Image 1 (cartoon, one colour):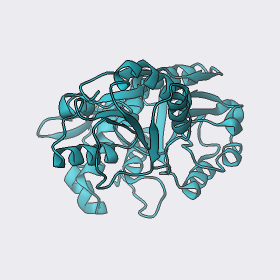
Image 2: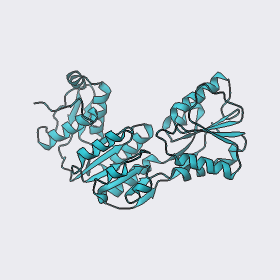
Image 3: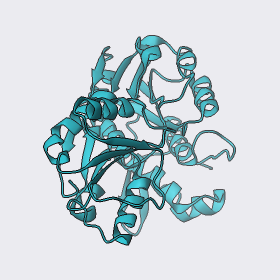
Image 4: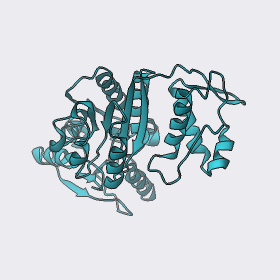
Length: 332
């Protein structure tokens, strides 16, 4: 009996296909409590996929309470009580450290009261459209993270309005939908305002804004703050071998550029905080450790997941701005 089925050219990620296969086998009573799942090595060899992919799928099943891991023996079915009335389609733009935090918060709050399937569009409008078209009618709720892509509204309108929740980024074309979102312009402005007394010790604020997937509200908030308080400022799209000047403060929205700035500072033998400053966007555990702590402006992603779950489980409507805060550390 083949429990796991993977279609190589499907737009559904392979780890999600593994999860779907196990859940389907449970629904069809092909698996019972204490049954052992195929080993990670066996699945890897059979389908030619990485260990990380299989491990990630099994760990999600573990977090859902469906399987249990026994050290040295493998993964076993923990519970067959798998009869969810609520089926949730969760479409992320991409997976990173802070959105993973949001996802696990959402799962923790949902517990086993719903069946959650997660997908990714990676800022590709064709993939976005295909995933929604293929899954229209298969779920009771649709949670969608459209990112900053254009032309998502007509695609989302295919779905029943009352069953749709917009997550993280929204826009004027999606204001009719319930949402838990960030106000990027306000959050950037208010975060810089809270840091104003420290920023006054520097000469210039530089926003590194690639502008490919980042919300344009960040630029609006940055510009409005600098103009209101008459601070010298600049916006650049990348940081590659650029010289850091004494008195510069970098506001960095992409972690790749955070790494580049820190590398360049070491090359120039500059001291962070003393010679120049850094404010990074989006909190991750690593930023509390790197260079004795990087200052961040960030929404509370864990809280965002909890609020979203509560709305979905209770079919609540509304548009909620998730709270944001400045976390002062050694880099400023």
